[in-house]
Length: 532
Image (cartoon, rainbow, N blue to C red; front, side, top):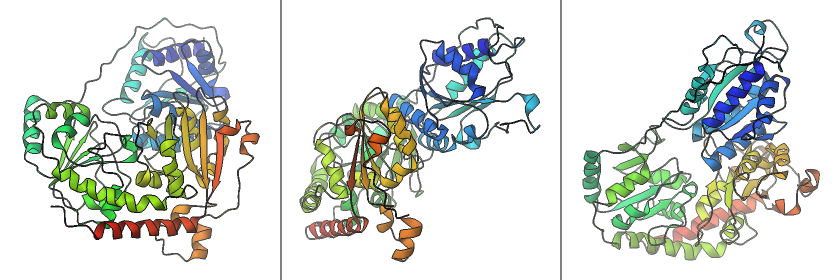
């Protein structure tokens, strides 16, 4: 006798016990046992979306906002392949997803059976762990499913977070009356990456001996305040560090243009926390430094320039707190030199950031943001990294920078909005790429506000040097179009406040960025004597 439904109920119950709260489902007949198990479980929170690609990014947003694993359930065939973009992003950005891909049983594989393909290890190295379940069977050990689910969720969290894949074949009939005994519960405790006393002493002495250091905060959160109060080094925070609102006595705003205008700025060492930074000027400047110490809570290499000299794998906040306990406060003169240059830069640049320009739109969000901020790739994330430095506390800042794609941005925002209000700044091409995910924004727990900057194409290609003539650039790179999106709210039955479109001009934006670069260079070079 088939035991599909009993099997599915145990599987879902074990996922919930392991901390999986949200289940994202796309309609499909082969998912029938899991759908009924979720519907019968009052602890399971579920969302249904007709597009598996959007569904994957929706789960990504849920996991980004909560920090917890989120399950995705699809039927077999191309439905599974449609998850690949979100899986790739989750892999690169270390977001915990649990992929439950329903499948045809073994006897239908390699037989030309409808909607049947080889789903085993379909995501390759993009998942941290793969397991192929057998078809539901009463003869397996009682705790087989419990230990398997514990293992797969464990791998989505440790040694670092990321997607995992469980292939789930079911035989018909799906809704049977067979039963399985209740399994025992399996618990897995994860260790923390912490430094021992010897390493704390070693790095205390190292930092004590560095006179002129710079702190860089890449993507990710760290409690830098205990250490910054002792070191008094300038802090250069990436937009995705969500730490632009640290006390102003340490943060250096507009460092992208500062280092672009003055690449000769010196430092004895760089203390770098977290993941990749967006600013190319910052990355180029780091490449010239003799000593770069990278602290992260995972063992993955974050070093595209191959210039990091020391890597410390530990909890970054624990590192800051423990080291700070043994340091005495350093003088502030070094930081004040950087701050002075930054203030001159601000005075030169701010008058150029008019509200109807693309940088000005981003700048205006400093005083108009409620809840979280999601910034799409291409120009919005670059403008935000260059110009978004709010004076007061703001909510968390999100982006899909694992692989920096323009797909799935709206779906990701809808996922975030299950945990908090979110404002999304998105370009027209990113919007076009994910239009059908606007359907997800209608019933989110918290409101989604989408601000579309429509410059009728890929604006970034007006800035970067492709070597192509304008006619070729417009057609093959910018993918120029004439679409306007004023009717989208009506089409998807969204509140008018949910969607705003601002029209801009790509060429004018390119000229503005050139003007800003020139103003920054003139303001700094006229007053700069090498900081050394």
